[in-house]
Image (tube, rainbow, N blue to C red; front, side, top):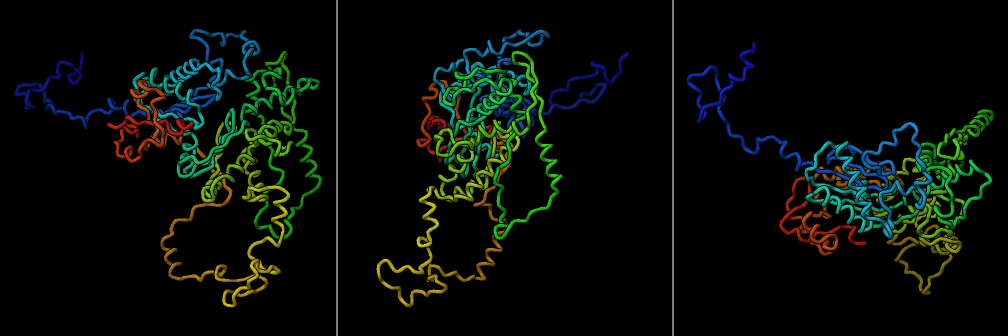
Length: 569
């Protein structure tokens, strides 16, 4: 027996004109026309969803604009490149022959999406890797369908145009994206830290890139080959030396994958690097400003405690189980020995700084020279906002060591680009110091006028060196206007950032217009060759265009588009 209020027969359609039925079993609701403003937002959800994609060499991160963190991360590797239906990895007796898989290829190259050197690189394979990683991420983490959606790509500013063209071809042809906006990773890192100017130190996989950002613009960029790949190589050398101490190491001039036979797999060596490798602190501790005058205070400590602490530190070891070698083995390594890979990779203090080329400078020297090449006002802002990012920034103690080394160089050398013995003798010569005229006659032989100044304590005081008087009215105006604290400038300081993806998500969520915005029709018609130079595009015309959903500029005069900093290479 069905209840009356649940019977389908009791539901009656309303009469025309919105009047109640005269003879009916119950009242009916009149028809009210629904306008588009009161419609369900589910139909507009697909247009409002803006996807943020960050491409890296070893991984890709995806998510929606406005989220604090990415929804998912897809890593590249040989296990992720299996064919559909290949379930051999789940068999109990499965053993991957890593030496046969890596034969003829550089060590660990299967774990990379692309290489900066595009000579001889299969761009079709790169496009297939991008498509598979994005489809898995969209299905597994985002739970979205194949409907076209606008996308924002976060890329490093030094990415070659062939790789950028390959990524854009995949997004436009295989995912049918109507528009794609490009954002620089260094600017996104600065936005995620909440600053307009910063010195972004990207400790990446293949290289370390130091980028100076001033008012959301990249003003200077320098790089070195010291990165995560070299760190894994140095870790492998350490483990191989412990496995076979009698084996001779390859020469420094040989290529890493040609002059060396690897003793363990890349996956295992990479795991040891991520878990155990750390960086020891700087030898010269930073000098406090309060103890600049006089002797520093020494804290008393019992000798027995210090000796016991040193003995316990020396005897502390780490047990490392290696299974990819010819036979499984367990190594007992002291923790102090695990600092050698990081020391040899990023600092290499065994050699003099003059022995390095420009492309292989240690990281602390690269950061100092990058600050030295900046103008004074830009340097004052960037040195107070140093941001460390990248995969190698998670190494224990590495960021603090780089910061302490740069601070030590600044205290010793200052900001004088001229270095050497002659420069030190010139600085220490009292006769060449400015502001003193004791014992120095006038170079023209003309004595100063009596009314031009006076000499006190051996120093000549004139109108140029006179301290201005304090105006009480100006002081009151400054107190009333300067309610906010002055910005920090001219001192070394490090900041934390949420990352490039979070900064791009914030930029997209605030609907900030992006200059490097590419329309699908223009890209399919012209490709990368149809992009105009950044100097040829009128910014005022772009500012007058309307903002569409997702903060991407669109208008009738969209014929002039540019690749931004990527088109300048």
